[in-house]
Picture 1: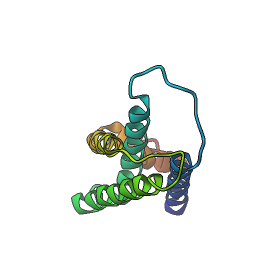
Picture 2: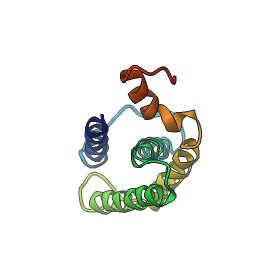
Picture 3: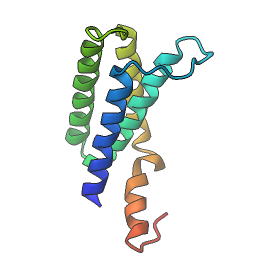
Picture 4: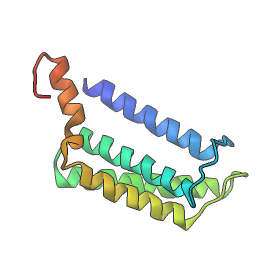
Length: 127
């Protein structure tokens, strides 16, 4: 199912990219800096998802973090030239917080969700 997982991961990247760059306005959150929460949540999910795909090796997971940093900087750069979006350092900070939380979650049962789904689909019962 590796091809499926990677395909879904790139679809996830495409959706986040579209939400980040297109002039789509979601519901207003009645939370101060609610958009920063969106950033953090997106990068928690990305780190947790791709961290599982690459396996438990430290180098591979650091590559995921590096790739997500480049992705986040690229998105912010594009937002700086695509109105009505704007680039903000606070967004990058929220992305980094999300990556840190996602990294921490990789060592919890959430960090083995894809493995458990694979096992369940293969007829195992490691859930």
